[in-house]
Image (cartoon, one colour):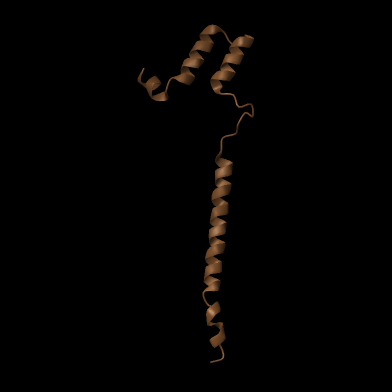
Length: 82
């Protein structure tokens, strides 16, 4: 009968343990998601925009420009069927 006052505390260690495990799992998921993102160029330009700029600066010729633009704009499945 000495421990009758402690019965209200009995569920808390289990709840605290589950809370700790949940926080660790959420932390791991957030870490994996943040590292899995593709690095951005920082300029916000698409690949086609960058290709247009290279062509405008004269870095690539017309044939190369048209081929690369077609590669970027044609879905991969359509290219493999050709």
